[in-house]
Length: 378
Ligand SMILES: Cc1ncc(COP(=O)(O)O)c(C=O)c1O
Image (cartoon, rainbow, N blue to C red; front, side, top):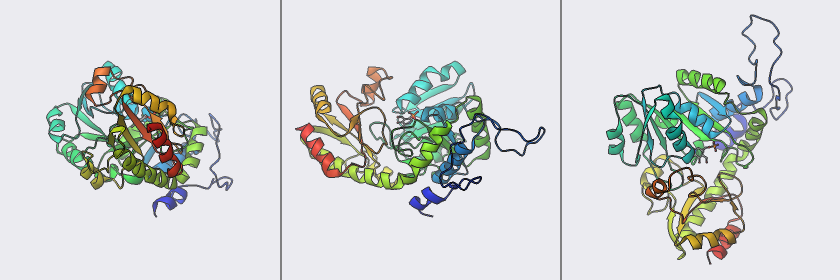
């Protein structure tokens, strides 16, 4: 089955009880139990599982080509649950430019559980290998990275992990399973912020974890229940609705991103453009080996902070906001938004300067987006 058909038909899309063509919102916290001492009833309490959330989890497993998927109350809920699979005394290696929330969790929370971490440049395989210690239990990757779209080689990192018998986890929020499949390369667990492209309408915060490994799934299921991290019913229903059109939305957003990247590259007011399929982008060849296109997010740097402030005041169409992956274009300022939780020197170290903007391209008509960018840059 191909992508758009799969998003509509490859999971239980009809309610088994009523035949409703949209899985209903089973808006209940608890379920009447027919008999005591009977394990055959599938649902007992919504924090453990709920029919609407379960339908979404089946949809997400199909979408990820995974045996198992879990739906979480946010991308960070999924990420923190996955990172907590590591035990006290063990060690995780992460990319220096990992998503800001993940970085904060790793720095502020994991030390309380005696979990050690090291940040390295994942584009440099030797640096990753050199950081491996006898107690390293997980390599956590994110490619392209946020916001500079830095690329790491999924296949090579998985090979490294397998050589040292280390677990791998990958944040695939930017490309999604539609265009890049870490599980297909042998990554053990994939996480995504469903808040972004999968839901696609900037009206839900949600996350997923997917795996082909039954033991990992059982552990994650237990954590989802014990941390109370399961996605709410209403949100699960909204994601089920939103993801049906994901293929079409993303196709259009990516087409727009490619055209905008080309436009910005030749504009004199733009100092630098970061987009994985541009010829000058470091890691372009690796990205094209493991992904089908450059995705819908790009970043660009203006010459001065004053230019940037004027630009953000003049731009009309994209909303100026945290987040990405909506049908509307979203312009973000990483230094004060997604990466504000990093110390200034660390941000600069990573290349996230005050003059940098990130644009998540929506599905607007490209003529309007280009005209708006041109007038704001002027
Ligand atoms: C790459 C990446 N991973 C994870 C997250 C966290 O997702 P959420 O905000 O749904 O918790 C984000 C949010 O921006 C992100 O960009």
